[in-house]
Image (spheres, rainbow, N blue to C red):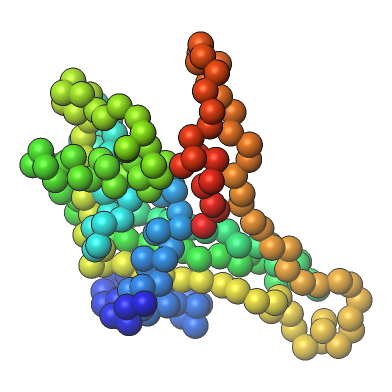
Length: 220
């Protein structure tokens, strides 16, 4: 694991709950590599927007993709300032007082100006990375994008230089008085995501076995 530290800026510095901030870049990588969805915030004509999308991390760059007609991708390609949030929910914290109920989580926030990925080789590599992050094994299994599909797909990158990581783990933060009174149960209900049984497409005319890269996929 790399011990390189994050470099906080004015807007990426955690101010509320500073003790939950994480400083190592490897912890940023861990959050991004275990999540499949991010939420991208940006402003258009003074109006805030937040949109969910898939992504992938390659070294110190986060890649997003979508239709060339997407407002998100058009704004990103134009260098509009954006803020990307990624959250992994690990459990619900049941406290002795409702004011102290909480969640255990790992989260990352990245600030910056995205850049358009137009070089054909770089775009191809980014699309492969996004595909393999979301659906490992698909790049070698399924048909690759053709020229028309590539022309209709935009790819942007976002440098991870300006990022923060914040986490919570452990028990409820109850007051000493509530703990001493010991009126109710308190603790954590862990949340675990898992993959279900693969379901074949309804438009598949021939019965085919589930490919190994699907049937053996493990939850991160």
